[in-house]
Length: 334
Ligand SMILES: CC(C)(COP(=O)(O)OP(=O)(O)OC[C@H]1O[C@@H](n2cnc3c(N)ncnc32)[C@H](O)[C@@H]1OP(=O)(O)O)[C@@H](O)C(=O)NCCC(=O)NCCS
Image (cartoon, rainbow, N blue to C red):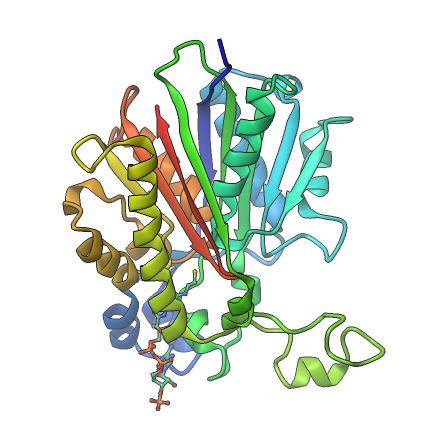
C-alpha cells in the first residue's frame, strides 16, 4: 500500500512583547482608526533586538517535537522558510539546524514567502511517500519587526507586520484515511514586483549589489502595491479553495476548518464572502498577531489544534498566498 504522510505534531512561538496600534502610531505617521478599518488588526508581537528568526524557531520546533512524541534525532530532513533570515547567506535553515543539534541532517531552505508552509508540506509529503525520509520537520519563522520601514513609503505594509514562528512534524500515517489528501502549488512571477525588496540584488545594473544610496533611497525596504496585492490575493485564494475541493470531491460541508494565511482581516473577509464559507469555519487570529508572513499558517494550525477548534479525524484546508506571487493549498485529514 502507498505510504501517506500525516501531521504528527505542531508547535509555535511568538515573542512576549505586544505592540498595539497605538504603539505603531508612535513609530510612524498612521492612526489606530486607519489600521483597524483597512486591516482589522489591533495588535501584533515584536521580538527584542537580540532575537533572530532561528532563535524564535527553536521553541516552536521543541513544542512540535513534544507534540509528536519524537526527539530531534528522529528527524530525517529539515525544511525552513523565512523572509527574515539570520544572515544573507547561507540559508536560515542551516543556522537553525546548528542550534537544534541536528548534525548531518539535510536542510532545504526555501523562499516561498507567505506560502512557505504549503510548499514545505508538499515537499515533505513527496519524500515521505517515496519512503526516502520518515520524519520531516517543516519550519516557518519571521522577525518582520526588523524590516519595518517607518517612512510614508513603507507604512502601508509596516502596519501589518508581526513576529512569530511555527513548526510542523510530518511522518508516515498508519491509517489510510488520515493524512495529506492533496497539495496544489502555484506561482506567477510576472507580478514579482507587486511586493518586493529591490536591494541587495544583482539586477540593479550596478557593480555592487548594495550601495549607501540604495539604503538612503529605501531600496532595501519592502515596497508594496497594496491594491493589486489585495485583488490578486482574493482571486487566487478563492480559486485555490475550489480547486482543492474539486480535486478531492469535497465541499465546505465536509470541511471542519479553513485555515488561510492571515494577510489582513479585510482580505480574509473578502475571500469568505467570495467563496460563501460560514464564518465559524474560518480560522482567524490576525487581529491579535498581525501578518507574520510564512509563520501565519503554522501558528494558526497549531492554535486551531491546541484550542480544540480542530480535532483528530477533521478535514482541514490550508491555503497560502504571498509575494512572487506564490499560492496553493494543502487538504489534510488530522
Ligand atoms: C495596505 C492597505 C491597507 C492600504 O489600503 P489602500 O486603501 O489600498 O491604501 P493606498 O495604498 O491606496 O493608500 C491610500 C491612502 O492611504 C495612505 N496610507 C497608506 N498606508 C497608510 C498608513 N499606514 N497610515 C495612514 N495612511 C496610510 C496612503 O498614503 C494614501 O494616501 P493618499 O490617498 O493621500 O495618497 C491595503 O492596500 C491592503 O490591505 N492591501 C493588502 C496588503 C496585504 O495584505 N499585504 C500582505 C501580503 S501577504
